Image 1 (cartoon, rainbow, N blue to C red):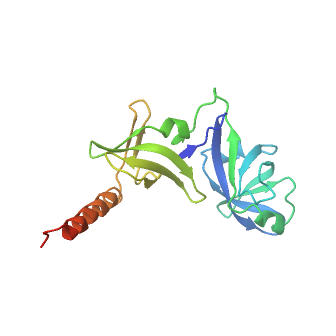
Image 2 (image 1 turned 90 degrees about the horizontal axis):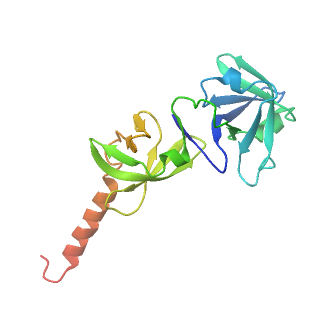
Image 3 (image 1 turned 180 degrees about the vertical axis):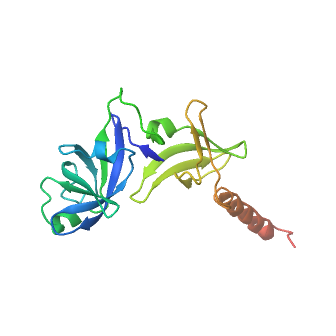
Length: 202
């Protein structure tokens, strides 16, 4: 389950580089695609999501070879010839342009499809998605609670977000206890403190 950016063109997030592997520039991949062999073919080009301070910022990278080694996906890139160069790419997220006519992958949505959807828990609307944040470890749905201020960060994983229905305009959540109640508890505590400070309070 993942959300993909849409910045003027459709892009699909397909992997994250998690660790340098060996001495020849290989990197282990965390996959966000159901078709790694098809995505990481020699010559495939990816846009890199890296910090602005990285020398790779604003650049693309091209696959030289993809392998599965000891059960792990490993990729070699052009111009990444040794371990030092590979370590400079650790935590980078790989994006690829996706043709509008291409069939979207299961459990993948664009940010603009998710933004504005109602967030529903136990058949009650508890908030609305205001944006999606892409972090190296996972995506977060940023939700503004119904009738409240502030924002709630909801991990975009199937255990917490079991259902996304774009057509119905809603996302079903099964959050852990306290995720949506925390702001309400803080407001109740503030109200209680105000009552105690009020003139005539016992």
